[in-house]
Amino acid sequence: MKTHVELGTDSYDIIIERGAIERFKELTGIKGKVLVVTDSGVPKNYSKCIASQFEECYIYTIPEGEASKNLTEFQNIQSFLLKNNFTRKDTVVACGGGVPGDLAGFVSACFMRGINFYNFPTTVLSQVDSSIGGKTAVDLNGIKNIVGAFHQPKMVVIDPNVLSTLPQRQISNGLAEAVKMSLTSDKDLFEMFEKVNVMEHIDEILFKSIEIKRKVVEQDVNEKGLRMILNFGHTLGHGIESEEELHGLYHGECVALGMIPMCSVSVSERLVSVLKKLNLPTEISLDKEKVLSAIVHDKKMRDNVLNTVFVNEIGTFEMQKMTVEEIVSKLTLVCKE
Ligand SMILES: NC(=O)c1ccc[n+]([C@@H]2O[C@H](COP(=O)([O-])OP(=O)(O)OC[C@H]3O[C@@H](n4cnc5c(N)ncnc54)[C@H](O)[C@@H]3O)[C@@H](O)[C@H]2O)c1
Image (cartoon, rainbow, N blue to C red; front, side):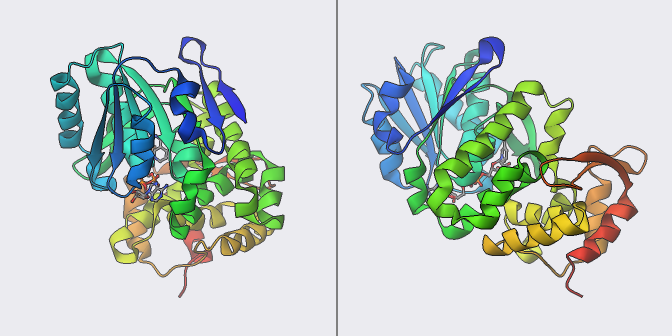
């Protein structure tokens, strides 16, 4: 399967193909030197398989986890490129989830004001979400994705076979984002989550989710309007995530919880069944005051009011202005008292 992101001179293909890792060079047609950026949790044979296809190829491995999305790693990779005489004709490939993807993408956006970037995403989350759309970034002073740039990849190559090594919880984490996209934009995809064995239909689910993200990005590349539907469930989700240390929840798990109160009653009943089927949380004990304070600091907040995405009917959405208090009062719908 193949789709094309139409962004004028920044357009690119997304290829979804079992075994694509073996044909990476052939599919991408990359020439010149290559640096593959991966992390210590991604099975080594993935980066090695890609590297082995090129004459001059280096592998740079960062420690796994969000903490690696920082300016020190950013600088270290830039220095590595410089030391090995990379030029604008050469290429950086991300091989891993959203962490190496966002970091390697940002390195590529900045090195010599922009060198070729290809993404080989290996988590469900990066395959359906972070590899598409050109948002690259690192974290700074505890604030996520605060230093970054838009830099589109030249191609995204997705091989669903690599999900065979991904822990089940990480699979569910990424599927939460796919469920999110289906709720606002694709009734058929939501019904697939209800009816089918998800892993038996994962290729089609990946493709349909990517199509939603592609269309949103094409219409709103710089995140000025429509792209905010991708934030569905994220206002409460981020608030819940601020208590992350307490709960140890993954981002997608917080988004799952954050979506439930932002739907009509009938939709939220169906959503809860899907989330349970995917082993995602549907209720939580939390300190509402902490969630409130995290939401108050949301950068999109204006005069105590946030523009939120609400789903009345599956496959559609509406924008609703809600005060922080209204948003937090909705938390009772997912709170274990
Ligand atoms: N750029 C965007 O538009 C965008 C969108 C959403 C999220 N993000 C970012 O994405 C990041 C989260 O991405 P993620 O969920 O992919 O996390 P991640 O990159 O940390 O990967 C999760 C874990 O899975 C391991 N892993 C990756 N692929 C594997 C595989 N095939 N087999 C076994 N283990 C594997 C990794 O080592 C890591 O420990 C966050 O930093 C977030 O800010 C970016």
